Length: 605
Image (tube, rainbow, N blue to C red; front, side, top):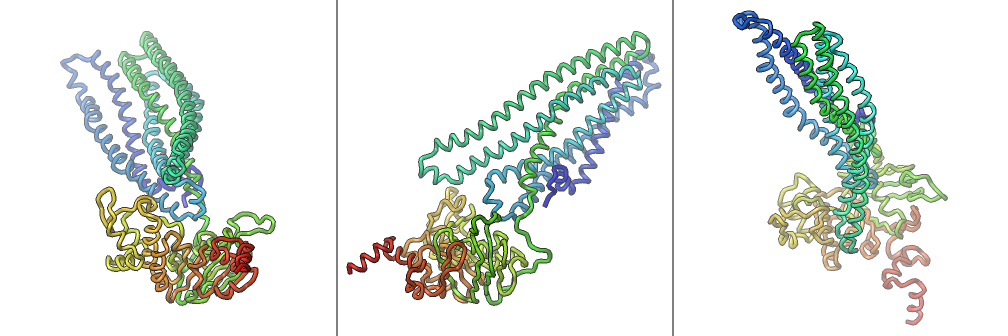
């Protein structure tokens, strides 16, 4: 986890580049000193030319001229080339990309709750922006700001070397320049932070619309989505307007200060020359150097404003990236071993981290033992806690109290990777990666051979439609890409690819969460045979609202309000008068008739 403070966050990602940062800093300082000294020599050269006989000029000043010539022609360009190499070849690309990579790795291991609470587009934007922000803060501080600071200090020292009064206009200008920065730059920083947040918001809104395009089309709400994006863009534009107003005021103030500095320096230099305190060369040096500095002043102020903007971007990213993982492995967590597949839920309490109100919990004191190799169906009304049980077994969330154990190993004390590697899952909301069909199936077993992939696809009754797939880039069959979240496939096709993926994984524990809900009856019947084969020798938890899909399970567990209220086989539970399962079965087998209507039909018969 990166440090959660802005400076700590920057240090965390800058640490590997410390040698390059120090090298760049050293080169920047050296180049700044050389540039000022070359300017100072120009003034001295004017004095030399005015006082020396041309016939004696080369003989008297040869080595001095050669030295400064070497500085300006060879040494300074060489140092600049080294500095550019450090910046462009060493840091500019590598720094940002490495930061993105590390941030992505860290965020990828966040809990499911983290991703449920954040826009995917907003997260990705913050990762991309924060990486650039960290890099630019480091590079501006060590190369730009350090270069400017050394340049100005060396310039003042050179002025004082001629006459201390010559430095007065520069010192006054620097003080006023400092007040200008103190007034305007923090405003720019705050507005830049606001802009960064608004930019993330707009990106999140746009990505949310694109991700849910079928819903937008189905409800004919393109205009509504226009307004949704426009609203966010309007908020962002207001922050841009505010920022530009501050920038305009800052430029007006700076132009006034710069004009005053040039005039004051020229006037002071001429006055000192008229009193014989300085030479003509000193006038040429001081006015020339000030003119050079004025050209830098706007650039420097914008660099400093940009620095505060980068700070704002980094701070905005810290809030998302440097967030503690909600679900973590305990120290020295060991890999899960599953020789049998027994699952035990003991006095389980869970409420998604919320306080218990009116005695209600999502899971309230649940006790359930699933024997090795047993096939258990979880049944209950919506909101009873069935899918939550599956999520807790996968440790997508940490439980509030109690424990979940697999073969006498508390899942809170084993590594998350090994836990999830031991469980195969097929869910109702099947999500595929925007990659080839082969890559999606192989996700269940990365080292699987093509023969194993083909066999899994055949068992899932997916081979026929896969052979006919063609994507917009003319990739066919197993090579065809399925689109974002598998959008190019039908619901049933996505489900069959997901089932093939789990067949290939062949994990000892299997969770089927409405696994065949998207399939038509004929395909479901065909796949059910293969699922039955897949379930052999495995511990299975099946969650279903369509009771016919789990009626043949070894045991059915009926849940209500987070508790187990009924258990037994299908035949046992159907006979239980007034039971929840019997009621649900009657509604489904009776065409969703209410119990009173069923009784009337039975009486009529």
